[in-house]
Amino acid sequence: MRSLISILDLSVEEIDELIAVANDIIADPESYGELCRGKKLATLFFEPSTRTRLSFEAAMYELGGNVLGFSEAQSSSAAKGESVADTAKTVSCYADIIAMRHPKEGAPLVAANNATIPVINAGDGGHNHPTQTLADLLTIQREKGSFDNLTIGLCGDLKFGRTVHSLIEAMARYNNVKFVLISPEELKLPSYIKKDVLKKHGIEYVQTTDLESVMPELDILYMTRVQRERFFNEEDYLRLKDSYILTPEKLKNAKTDLTIMHPLPRVNEISVAIDEDPRAAYFKQVFNGKIVRMALIMKLLGVTK
Ligand code: CP
Image (tube, rainbow, N blue to C red; front, side):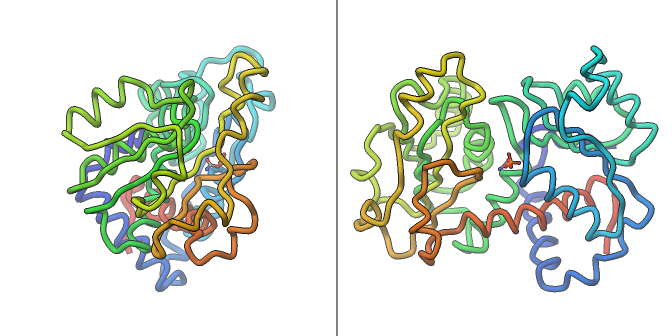
C-alpha cells in the first residue's frame, strides 16, 4: 500500500511512467474505461476545490470506478471534532483509495499513517500540491517536449502558493533548469525551499519584483493567485492581490514559444484577453490534471492496462 504525499514520493522514472500512461490515455481513452470497475475513490475535501476534486472524480468515473466523499468539512464528522486519523481509519472501511485536501499542512500524511488504503494529498495548506504538479509536468512535457534546459518564471504568491513549492521540488531534479522568482517582498519563496531545494541541488535562481524586465528570458511563465485564505490580515491581502496582472501589452517582449501556465482558479492575474493566445496553456493544465490523475489512481491501486 503506497500513498502520494509529496511529489518527491515519486522517482523521476515513475514520473516518466505516469506521463507515458497519461499520453496513452489521451491517445486511446476507451481502452481505460473498465480498468477500475468495482473500485471506489473517496474524495475527502476539507477545503474548497473545483478542479482537483472534480478531476479526481471524473478520473475515477472514466476508469469505470465509483466515487464517494464530501466537499466541505462541515458536512463531515470533523465538524463534531473527529480527528483526521479516525476519519482515515473509517474511510478505509468504505473505499479503496482516498484523495484528501485539508487546510492544515501535514494532514494527508497523518491520514496516510492511519489509513489501510492509499492516500493522495490533494493540497495541504500552504505546503504541497503534488497532483497539480503532475498536471503541470504533463503540460510541460506536451508543450516543450522535455523538462531540461528551461528557464521558468514563477510569479505571484510564492510564499503561500503550494503549487509552486511542489513544482520547484519536481523541476529541480532535471538538467539545466533555472528559476526566476517574481513576487512582492512580502510573498517571496520561503527560505526553507531556497535552502533545502534550490541551493542543495545547485539550481540557479534570481529573485525580482519586476515581471516585465525578466519576460524576454522565460520559456515558461507560471502565474499564481495571491492566496487570500492564508492571510491573517485582510488589509495586506487587498494591498497585494493585484501585484501582477498579465496583459497582452506585458507579453510584447516575451518569447514566441513562451508557455503561460496557471494552476487556477484565476482571480485577476491573467487578463481574459490572453486566453486565445496560442501560448496560453492553463486550460490545457485543467484537462491534463484529469488524465494524469487517472494514471496515478491506476498506479496506486496496482492496476495496469
Ligand atoms: N488548481 C487547483 O487546485 O484548483 P482547485 O482549488 O479548484 O482544486
